Image 1 (cartoon, one colour):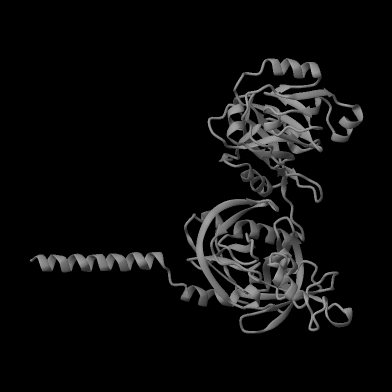
Image 2: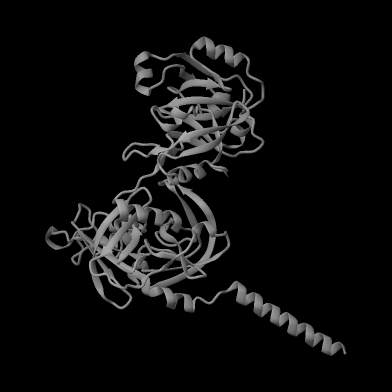
Amino acid sequence: MFGALLMLSLLVLSAWSSSAGARGLPDFTDLVEDNSSAVVNISTTAAPQKGNTFGLPFNEREFEELPEFFQDFFRRGPRGDFGGPGGNRPPRQSMGSGFIVSSDGYILTNNHVVEGAEEIIVRLSDRRELPAKLVGTDPRSDLAVLKLSDGDDLPVVQVGRSEDLEVGEWVFAIGSPFGFDYTVTAGIVSALGRSLPSENYVPFIQTDVAINPGNSGGPLFNLDGEVIGINSQIYTRSGGFMGVSFAIPIDDAMNVFRQIRDNGRVARGWLGVLIQEVNRDLAESFGLKRPRGALVAEVIDGSPAQAAGLQSGDIVLEYEGENIQLSSDLPPKVGRTPIGETATLTILRRGEEMELGVKIGALPEQGGELAAAPSEGGPASSSAPLGLTVEPIPREFADSLGVQDGVLVTEVARGPAFEAGIRQRDVITEINRETVSSVADFRKVVESLPEGKAVSVRVVREGRALYLVMKP
């Protein structure tokens, strides 16, 4: 009897283990077979440049990510000189990936794959090589749209919805790392909504899928065989894959694709503010129970935000009913909003929540700010005297910074101000939400500061405003 029970238990455990293994380790065979035909290899040729690499199988941006000894190897020509024999530099060549999104030959890839290209050749899975025309690019999202000159009844990918992705979900990529066509790699979604320093308008998908130079522009699939992202960047210190890869969400990519295809350009919503992250000390000084939201450090003159009455020191907590947990959550939401539409913002102003309607404008082609984060100063930790010497702002200096009021910091000794990150030539315009217009205002506000409590300090540094936190 005991032996029968033991055998039954072993059978149950074996069946459970097999089932769990099947669920945890999917078979990609059919998915790859069904989708490979719509993935393409993209090779480009461009005019040579000074310091050009010799016969690169990938683009210049990815070349810079390689270790130095690899860069030296690819730079050297057949005789060991840089740029080939006789100093005649060959045309620049690069390689990347892409995928077909319509049967008449439209292809999505990265902008950096085709940037500066004079000739673009697309190789299909059946080894046909077809010339492609560049329809348009969007450097802000690093996307480009190509059109095959001989496209007819081509295989296409199935486009999914990146907003349905969940962290931990299995995904796989097909591309051409280092020129090796139709290489398949798999992993999971590591994080969503990542903001990178080089891209303010893309909430990247982070994965641990192995991505290397040449994978750029290739598709990222889910287990339903749908494209949910475009592989774009990697974090690396060696030039190769280190377990952290980033993909552009397909929802954002298809929005860009449709605008380029239909209008030849991409229009984005514009709020017109400079924002920064709300850390623990800033949250305390502004009366928040925990760090959240996007702190408005500066409102740009003539912007939709200024017209709507948004002020520096406001914290955006919600945009169109969606929570803003990190400051990086705000720019993509604004960028996707149709121009001319009125968006509702929930903000915190002087400790009280309120709603504000903003008519979204069009992001300027050059020099416009949707929402960019200035650099932050160091943490505040001291309770000693402030250690600040200030004086009225010389008029010419005020004009150069574009400020009307405030005091100029002329000396910073060791103390709370220094620890907060305040430096010489900073202009202080506000302390603890109180306006500082003169040296007299500065003295009055400082005398009334609560001891040991974090207070916010708004400074203008090199023309950009930011909030720091100080503990007197």
